Length: 239
Image (cartoon, rainbow, N blue to C red; front, side):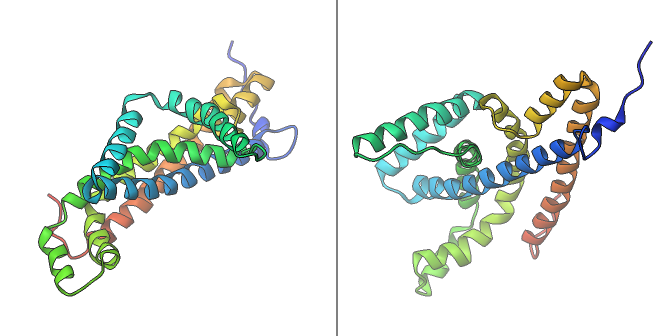
């Protein structure tokens, strides 16, 4: 006989776990947003290095993207979190300084950002290549500086080509936050596991977590579609 589900366990106040789930969900959104933005910055730098950089910069960017795409994301996160922290503290000790204790949120954002940056580099590289060279040459002919050409011509022109790929990367970032549960960061997946283990209501809590992830995905889709329509203003409609 199937027992009735006790929905009171989702109450926002104790003994319910609803408040803890929402707090974990907000931390997941923080992680995803911070890591995604960091990945955009790294991706732009990586794409610029691959297209306009010298041989050394191109090789470094190529090695970075190869590493990101070749190694599973969970392994990368463990490497960046544990090995990266040890290397940083070893470097600080060699300089005669005290070690750095990185908080979980900063470490999580850094890890997700480094992973996202490898994929964003390729997305931006392809988008920049899709910009008609004549537009950039015309801006240069008007005497614009390289930075102004990038800001006023290249970035706006590449946005419609980059947005579909970057939309996928945002969805991946929201899912990658769950991997940080293995290093003990208290995001939605870890809180859900703790609540389910404490109450033995695995079905209830994992369904609740799945619905929260689904809500984030639906809201994100609406926002991303609006951005894509805005970026494509004045361009031919896609078939």
